[in-house]
Image (cartoon, rainbow, N blue to C red; front, side, top):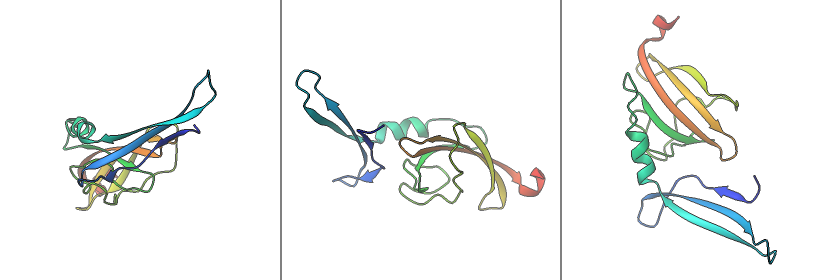
Length: 134
């Protein structure tokens, strides 16, 4: 939607991760427009994601459209690093994908895409070798 903005995560003034949310608002009485802007500390959001207990040592985190990790990941890299898993093309539905992990094991990962803000929610569960999956 035009008039809205959500930034990617960036390191703020004190090297803490933040993101910006902004929205254009029009005063119906005067017709004047202005922008409401907030800078959000991501600590609470990160805490929620890291507390999700996925079976098999799973991981839940968010990456942007370029594959840059936006929230801490237990297994796929540090904040603001590039994700090694491929990002699928846009789909209106959540998808489940299979990839080869660093140790040669299979990694199943789900992806939920949000096109308006180009945010990809990842989760994964890895078991066995890729040969076992065939």
